[in-house]
Image 1: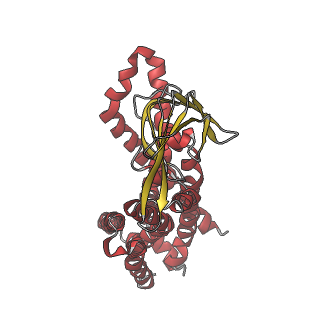
Image 2: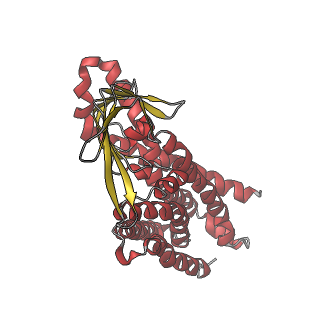
Image 3: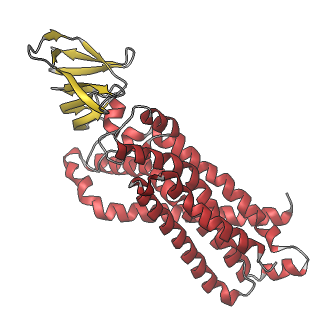
Length: 363
């Protein structure tokens, strides 16, 4: 690596660290300002416990904040590093020595691709492993959560209900399981029976719920009943906690989304699944494309034009983000029944624009 590459890469990484701290810190401060009263609802636990709960909450949710701001962080890092070089008139010296500005920004593009890999790792490995902790509310204390379970669907199509689910003991209180079977001729679910119990505790080794006073009532004119001791299910305590939230699919990995897709959910859920899977591929690519669009604008030789260049760069980034947001909305609504079209549309629009701008750069 040449000295110039090391210098450019160092400036970019410093800018990346600053942008990372500023954006995530600002996101945390705004959220804390809005939800401070939610944290203080458990003030009876003591000041240290409240502070510890706040720290754990935002430490875990920083993984989500990074996922949402990864593209903007990269653009801000480029603004920081290139702005410093423009202010010091370094581009003029480089061009005078015969170095192309495309060669100068090459380390930034290379590092942005590597840093985009962090986004993929965060989305596919870190967030899914922390999913049950990321759905906690501000007033929830780790180990003391208790939720109502309403209509969680397992791989067999059965619906799980419970008055209360104790997270620490992995126990369902007064659970009710509606057993359903799929009727392909009518493409509908048909109720086959119901299981009720006083309690259900999850057995991770047998991957089943051990029932206390479990009773199965079969659907039919005579309503035959028999005692059941357990109910095998792919739904674990962690899945119950995650699926409380309507946006739980954003916390799943690609493999988990694929497994959920094979269960044959409703059409609306199917559109969301397809949308999530396609955007998992296109969003990292789009983050790099946003940077490629901004780089030719930010590489200006006149320090007086830097402010307008930064404003133009942020405007282009805003247009890209808005296009992605609109595409996500249309994809989940299954407009034209082409989810993959909306997922790839921002790339089809902005990648040629980025390549054209790079080709027309005055180097």
